[in-house]
Length: 505
Ligand code: ATP
Ligand code: MG
Image (cartoon, rainbow, N blue to C red; front, top):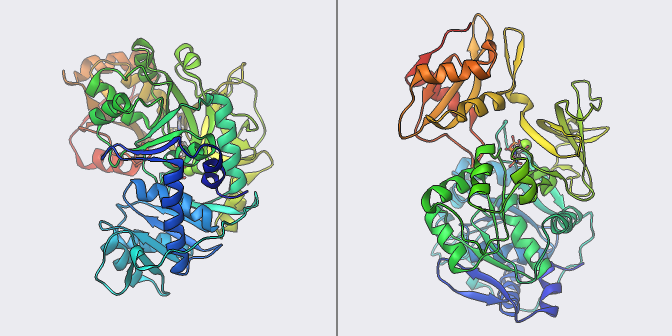
């Protein structure tokens, strides 16, 4: 198999492939193919060859899209990096992923140079923009010539993608051509493909949620609309203006888009929402406004989706992430690794063709992650009688207080169900008497929090030991780019900010 764009351009050269929402410029498959061919051949002239590790330190935009296709054409392994990374963060990723060449742009060039200086070996830096430094080569300096596209085998590593780092150091996940292909096909079976589909991609292109639609679209022959930065109202307007039929979001983005414009335009066939828990109340709001939300559960290690609910299913069961995609097997296991019955919660373990063969050059982490039923996700959840999955929280987030296990997700749900709370995070903080105590950080609604009213609301819903004893407030919860709550930042805010205390009884 050659790169997906090369296969696609032969059958639909005149179909629209890419639109830049910031400028309105558009590319057909033929013109995108020419642009990618030129980028690829210039990189090749600069020495990039099959098997090289090529990092992308680029702002989200057309160049980042082209580089995704160009590396596939060259047979190179793409290592997407966040443009916001500091030099030490960049140096760490470049080092751990054995990057040979970093592609940067005007915004990231100086960070990339500073990162390269920290490394013990040399990496070449190529910029998409202009550069007058002699240690950064402008792509335009290379003479383009013709490329021989590389043929891929299923087991070849195509992407080295870092996880979000919610639970510790980000891990470099190996994703093969086979993983990406299986993910694209299985996703199509769940969500359907309409040749007229237009995917708006406001998610960063260094995250699986952003890369997946860009790659899949070339396989499906549909249109990608890239947005250079996220702004809630503008993204809703783009859906309407560019007649997007599909969009991928993290829950906080959707929430902010709904607050900005009330609802989403009805040209949308679906809004895929995942990367972090989607609160039931957000799904219910979508149902009330006929927004076709498809809650999805996925991770970097599974090339995105594990399970996805169609919107009709989500409307009926607002808490589910749907059943696993075609070929993916999800098993719920207890602390000893033994499968449990439907309805019982435990760790979610997944197996199937989208699952990574392992972490890059890290046999210890890989060995630890895999068991007899597959990849241990580190997430706690359960399956209902009909095979739908529900994700509760992460294994690491369970709070152990006075010998009792508290599921933070349940406490968050109870808090959010109160009108004075817009959003909430629940963590365990050290406690001399109880080992850990339940603490909450709230985003109050406009009316503000009435602590007494909130307390009696919580006491009606939660056993005494689950009640948050320390409560702080904040304007917006600290989150990673993928939308997950940064629990250490929450703890720190609770420690440093003003809090109120409820009695444990
Ligand atoms: P790290 O692995 O470095 O700690 P991370 O797990 O946040 O970071 P990602 O691969 O980006 O990195 O995120 C996958 C995780 O996101 C899942 O394991 C799960 O915890 C969470 N997640 C994704 N979708 C959902 C969802 N619909 N509901 C609840 N959690 C979700
Ligand atoms: Mg993870």
